[in-house]
Image (cartoon, one colour):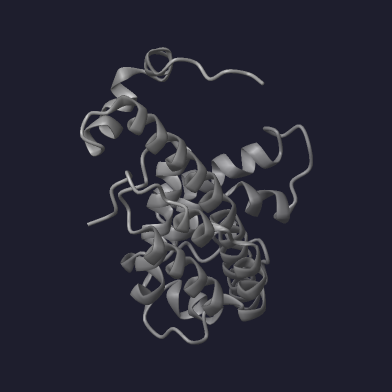
Length: 221
């Protein structure tokens, strides 16, 4: 059996700066800080999987609605070409980057599926901002039949996008209201497709990891 490295070695390798926030959270004890760091990594990895399922579900639902709108209005299924000139400059730049990645900068043919897959969670979130209230929301709202207001969808997606970014950058999430964010994930999935939401729920271990939260780890306020 391999022995664990001494706590001081881990502190140096992970960096005192990175562990500093964890040490503060547990009153300065280094071993408890490392335990908190480990648990934070476990809950992050678990949440990452569930958020990934949600991201794919959301982008495909929004893509379907945008395709229907663009095809009906402009006879152009490639909505990301912006035939109606409704996208902001930033949105167009993000699309251009996605098209470049999807085609390996012109070295392979472009397909709609590759372009859509290259658009980030943040891209889809920002298609739901208030400046698109009149242009995109009347079409995108059909992705969530039970939701009438744009903010009903935007607000939880914004929180989940922020959580995803923290996880992607290996930042602490232990102080976040993870139980509520887990519920928001399943809510948004359920609004989009109840069957897929049930599948995501059956494979999500977030609540199991939360139940194993060490007693020394502070809970969200």
